[in-house]
Length: 223
Image (cartoon, rainbow, N blue to C red; front, side, top):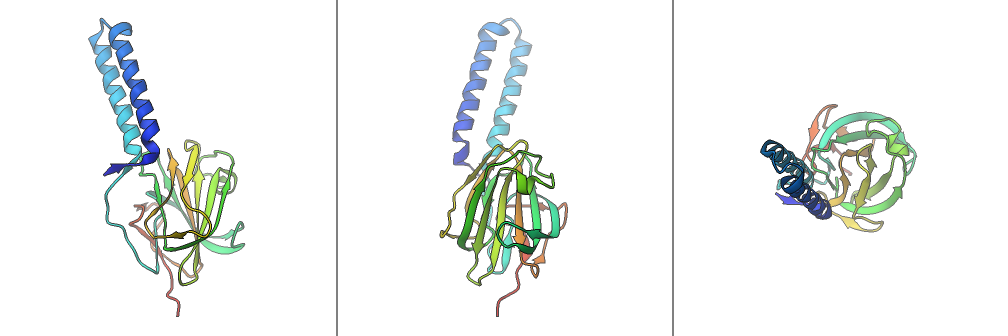
């Protein structure tokens, strides 16, 4: 396991603030109360470990396959439905949404290999991530990758009530590889996938996904 570069500043700042607070308590606030000092130290350690675990990148064997769409994030499947994707495709698609809690790994990975055909960032609100309007009104990014077969997959990072910063590492025209990082969302949110109607969905509502590992859907082979 390693720690994500996006967490460097937050982890250092959190560590210094907690250290200063504990030193202040030890020498001034609770100098004559060993129980309070011990409790503060324990709480501070737990808080720091929670921040550190948020930025972890576990070592795991990634799944690859030309016809497989891999989960872009760790989390829980909260939506599987046929819907109209109105931003790019402007037609009916199969939507799969993965909710990411603050305890999940927050690296976002490319679900397929291909070329980025479309990218756009939208500022917006911070509704709770499971709110029906969060995918169209919250801060978000939209990425469309076209596979070598010509199939296009749209995936969308969506900020939530807790997540207040979306980070991306892709741009239009860039080739991307399945399983590589395309972004990061700080402190919980969700990722939506929009798939062709003939895609065979391999997950169910409530399933727990692992980014870069879980097969979300199987695409038909192109003749």
